[in-house]
Image (tube, rainbow over the protein chains, first blue to last red):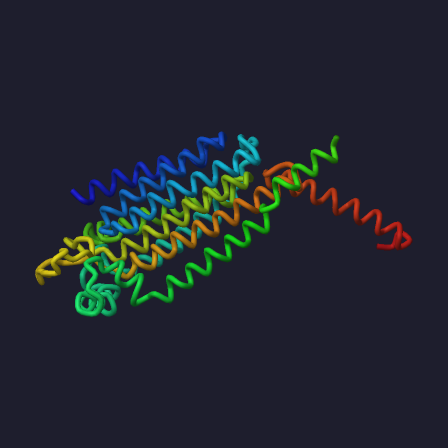
Amino acid sequence: MELFINLVLFSMLVVTAVAILKMRHLFAVVMLSGVFSLLCALLFVTLDAVDVAFTEAAVGAGISTVLMLGTMALTARNEKMPRDFSFIPLAVVMITGAVLIYGTLDMPDFGSATSPAQLHLATEYLKQSPSDIGVPNVVTAILASYRGYDTLGETVVVFTACVGVLMLIGNLARRRRKDEEGAE
Amino acid sequence: MTMEFILGHLNYWLFIVLMMIGFYIVVARGNYIKKIVGLNVFQVSVFMFYISIGKVEGGTAPIFPVDMNIDPNVIYSNPLPHVLILTAIVVGIATTSLGLALIVRIREEFGTIEEDEILEIESKLQLEENSTEGSSMGGRA
């Protein structure tokens, strides 16, 4: 049953991704990217990652769609006709995909309880966090406490990005106005 | 290649297929907004791949009952990939917004967000610069 749900969600994801590739109306592309994120959130739920699912739904489908719509409003609505078909990108993508699939051949089976990823740190976290921290949600316990420094680093990255965005387009409105005055 | 092997690895391959579609959008399409969307597709596929490594067969989400009476027979999925990917999602939106801001600036400078048009304008600018600087250097540059 789970495999069936996975396969259905996956085929919807592929259809969405191909539609993104083919569409030339950027509005449709941006909306489809929101759809893609929501479908991913569903897939995260089937993979037991509920925290990731709602973050993806809020950030991927919400905020990033809004940001892209804003950019679209400031730039262009349509993509130009795609340039002539060339084999080089397709070949690069095919080779990369083949190499990656070759790399997965050594990996443990999906869902196996004895794979290296499940054996060491994760069991410790699951065992210790009720007595160490006492928060029912282990993901929260790790995020905010065991790996609090990671989260601090994440905040630094977001802050840096904020500063970068402000420096790039912070005085956009002022510059626009100056341009208009200059034109008159 | 037994059936069991294929079923055990199918998930990984499916995510790699999605990843490659995203990658193709990035390298084969000239529109910058579309490139960013492709980058997002690629990124989310990597996230799904990573999360699928933490999944345990028959497991459930790593959240204990509120009264903290933990049943030792319940299997929980690995919480560590979830934490890492939560961080990655937020960092992803930060890089996306930076990319979008760059696109707005590019559009302001060049009047277009199509890659080949921008390359054309750039080469024209380069030619002009070469000719003016070339004449000032006595046509030798």
